[in-house]
Amino acid sequence: MQSPLGDRLYRTITTVCAAAIPFVLVLLTAVVVRAAWPALALHAGDLAFGSTWDVPRERFGAVPAIVGTLLSSLIALAIATPLALGVAIFTVDIGPRRLHEPVAFLVNLLAAIPSVVYGLWGVFVLIPLLRNTIMPALLPLGAVMPLFRGPAYGPSLLAASLVLAIMILPYIASVSREVLRAVPPTQREAALALGATRWEVVRDAVLPAARSGLIGGIMLGLGRALGETLAVAMVIGNRHAIPDSLFDPAYTMASLLANEFAEASSDAHLSALMAVAALLLLITLLVNVLARWLVQRVATGLPGSRWT
Image (cartoon, rainbow, N blue to C red; front, side):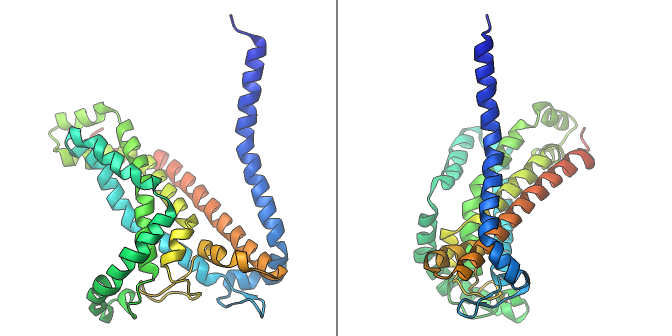
């Protein structure tokens, strides 16, 4: 027999839990915008379009940090997405069944490593490898590709992108794996019955059916990359300028906040940093809204598999 009191209590608890997340998001946004308002009122144009960050003269141009954030995240996404999709396809459709779970476990284990460990690995392993081996080997390409020009210091946009790619790979791979596993077995069996090979089944039957979820996983990885702070601050070089090549040091909004917030002494400086935090929050929200829109567009607007 159902208890009316128990039902009401259960409904009340679940309603409070559901309302807590939007409330926290609204409260967080209100606090950040309120703290950033003096800088937004006085330096909005400089923050959005300026490139000079000079605290004593109260010049707070955030464009290099915004560009560094977007470039490092997009490059990391371009590196991590093919690897993550390959891992997901291997552990669901292509690889031997006995290797599915061990490989998935090892990839997921990457998500449990603290970001400071990634940063230390970047400082002591990746940067020397880039400075002494990879960058000198790529420098001749700079004659035809500006992306590979410049001195090989080591701390650079490339180093930050590689570290970010490793950090977001388990998120994209995990979501992609679950999405591929959710594709009905009949989809695969129908394609096999029509004479498709294993690769054709994945390409023409599985991936089209799972594309909305795959895009959602990729966007989740992008959101993770945009907000990463400590590991990026340790390897990106922290130079407040727009990078001309992958070898140049750069800056991100998160690393700018991490490096300067503890040392900010004036109200103008603190307010400018909160304005950068507000911009980062806005970009993250826009990326998530765009991801939601893309998932809906892909799920409802594109044609399906040719095997269906």
